[in-house]
Image (cartoon, rainbow, N blue to C red; front, side, top):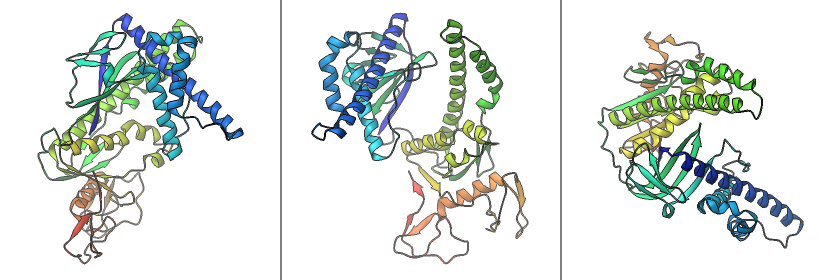
Length: 398
């Protein structure tokens, strides 16, 4: 299993300059290869005898001309331009497979990064040896044990980070979960997560908390003259603030997902259509501030590392409309209704807690029969005739 550990670097002034040069070389090589790819592809359409461009040919072409045309490339590690072109080849492969958009040119200040392979660097305790730069200090040591694959050095808000990819053993290296039973988790914007046991975790709402400061720094940046040092300083202040907001959100999600995976062996969540939810312009900012996709991503790999089970309920499962006491389903329930009473059993429900309890019920009822009988799948009704004994899970398990 591949894991990436992102560690902050502490380079001196000379090393920081060298990292900037390597990132600039990687960005130039990527843009040069993208331009050549487009030019050669257009020529191949007019003349079918010409070969189509590919990543290997572009790397050989750059190696043949860089000493004469781009001698400054030799000041940094050779991996920087070569890996950039390899990444371009992967981008085109994903584009042709229909999994991503057409590759775009990289920009200075936004795409400041380069990649080095495992034979080009070494790691000892809290330092990493980078070609042409020597040993660079790290804020912490590498946490994962296994075969080191590569390292990507990037700059965000004026700070340098090393994302080290490690191929770890398949067996979960972490202790098993405490197995406090199954838990249903309902995500929302008032409370980030509501658990089936009644617990509510209120998110930091980092963007909402610091939105006034973001607007103030944004107005200050807009008034600065383009190309001036004051504009560069104002831009860095705004970038650091956005980085702080992202760190606050990420820290809360890591603490919540770690706590859930340590306590519960089986976790049930909803398959939320986040992209569709963001089309509601009244709630788009609050939804994006919670980080629903990142929450699910972290739960996926953390449950796998601890040997747990993550069940993703169907997107159309009416967890909020179903009465967790008798199974009665409301015809409609608007978003503003946070409390409702069941017309059948007259039980008062908290909307989020009720949804979490219904999700927890899917941990035992989300099964489909392997031999074709009728079972209790995600959309079944209560009091339905039970199917044969042999069953397989119908939830998306990770």
